[in-house]
Length: 302
Image 1 (cartoon, rainbow, N blue to C red):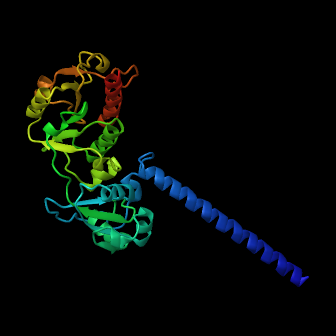
Image 2: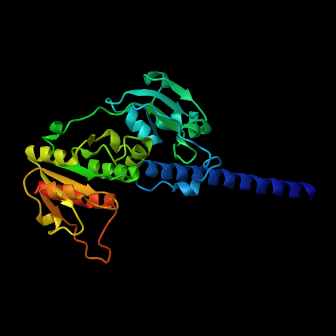
């Protein structure tokens, strides 16, 4: 009798172990699938406040040199390492993240590779950065001139859009609709950074991000290059679809709160609105950019 009970317990333990292993396997697959979608920008990353870590209140960002940029996140770093225009300095990564980057032998990357802990990266980026165990020290991308964009039929111009998350999301949409560049001001606009690159989810490596000194002068140069510049304004006199003209369009979007500045409104070729039949008549600037890019690309194809 005792032997039978013992055998029964052993069988139950084996079944439980099998179930536990199976559950762990499926949990790993689900996590990998979710991480892949997040890296592609198909689902949002968790809000920072939901990932509060010990030491977040005490962390102070390190002082960076003017030409020093830290990029992070698997998709962002993978894209930067694949960009021949990048001058990369050093890759800091956990052993697990190095495997997930799928870059091949570390000694063939052409830059130093340092195996670190997640806490080591936290010390540089801060406890709230969702770095996925990888950080790349690099240099800013080469400066591009407006003249180089004369053959691009579609450009996006930002009038003091300050939030790097919004600029990153706008870059992603600009790449999706094959815009030639994202143009913005040097003041009151984010510089190239890890936050912006992470929000762009690889798009920073695929489209020129041009910062100019004077927006009105830049719009004038775009006019000389043959562009029709259309400023988006919620109270614009005509719908965007009825404002298009010519075969080269530069869309101009204003800041998150104030919209287009008065000088910009006076300089663009035309002002236009996005017609929205619902109760809400304004959108986040990154959402408005995506809709305007779709409408403009449809016009240019017709």
